[in-house]
Length: 368
Image (cartoon, rainbow, N blue to C red; front, side, top):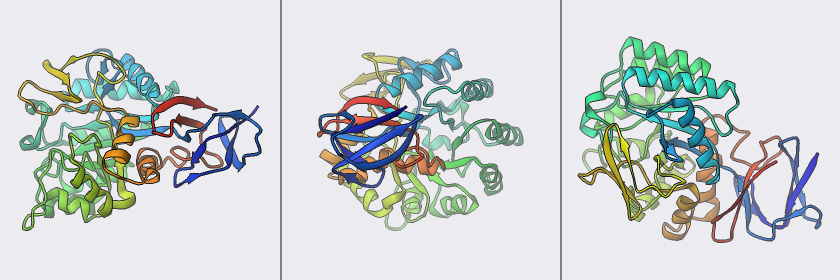
């Protein structure tokens, strides 16, 4: 059955286009054609690919790693789909080995069952630097072992995608190389590494950095740290665009220096898609107020932001061109995962789209 969507500007993954309609057949984009007035009239706004988020800790009241992991995966994917994110990596922050194994097993089951929106898993820790633990439990942070290496390689064979955030202080270049050669997307984060160690990790195969600027050695004029190495590298850079984790000026500098390598993540927690004002993280209370999620001591514990909110902040507050901000939430993260069938409106891509207002608010999620 053919569907035609028209009457809105179309963001194809690269640029905004006027006067075109999107043709959908069998759940895939069949092509774009001139808008001749035939088809479903969206009545204005912007038709864009569904958002892609590579760092999603929770949503719908669920947090990955707490409670039943199968239920958590379903609730997280459903909550974020309602917020316009049609593809995501549910993210497990630093946990004990049993919890990690249970989440991996649930992820494999979710993939086999075709869980809508599930693109794989992101394991953020436990192989981090305790000096940069942030909201992670420092008691659970530890160096990578041969057993960890074997578990991750086995998981990578069974999951559609696996992203692992680690610190060079907790994993050797040889371990990083082995994981990267197994198809795992290695991201460097929660690290106090000097520039030299960060560059060694990139050379070993690390392909990304987790939430740029946050929980990492900063840039200074004599000690560039992980931030300097990341900005001067060729790897993908995730960033939280909420104006709280990163202020406007360093965000704009990253966008200018990194260009195509920069992509948005929400780092969303259990409260996403709900009215909850608090939740627990490894037995610690997390409070939600004024757009912040914090521990009792004020430490940031994830972000209270959705992809449409991130998009609006990048455009209206940081001053990014709309096409660049849209690419950061769609095509760029999808491409980093090698999922060129997502994050774009192009022939052969999955027909998972969002209808946005002219002010970039979410109006509807469209499944072809």
